[in-house]
Length: 264
Image (cartoon, rainbow, N blue to C red; front, side, top):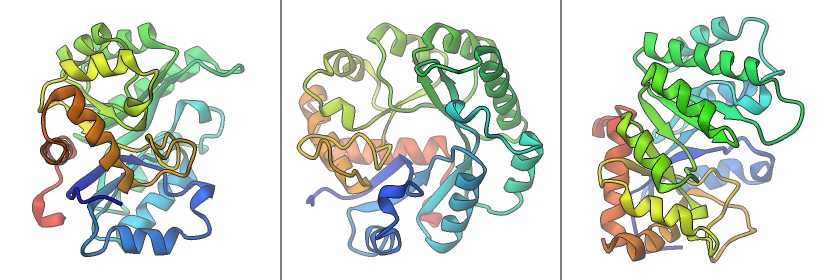
């Protein structure tokens, strides 16, 4: 798919249904020798997703995972949500983050207070275990910023789609920003402006696959190899060669999630 190499996908969902027919073959090929992809991080969303990530982290050398509950699934939690996370940490030494956690006020039926409490619990859990977080924020910027200001957590705001002003505040709080296929969309001028201001040591590349495939694959199933197209778009914005940007993003991913080269 690309001559670019060393791609580290910092946010993926290979447990999603679009991968059911060829998941094993795809991951074996994509994480094997000669692939442009050197690693992926699975962003867990619920109990089943946590189990999937742990199982895959045992199966594939370059597959890492997180543990956490997505805000959209706030009403689908285990009986003891925090206890479940504690036990999950005992099952794999390749759990590198708590996530995907955050706030999502996009769809009807959410409980704002419950979402905030769930997020705070998971931030406290992560800080207690010295783990970074993978954050999700949709239609809740001010509430999210309030919590970030209160806790000053370590982590990445994935699929960043905010303004340059929001980016600057998140960066000032010590957070990283994740960029994927949306950066390549024609209507993503605000995101491009924000990316232009992000320092070289504070951005990650991601897919959120199977969603948000970049141009020219928009509308198709996304996978980690497509980060090459994100990097090509990023080159136009930053004026830095795509391969260098991929290398920087990989280094930032390894730094944030404390992934040693001996594990790759």
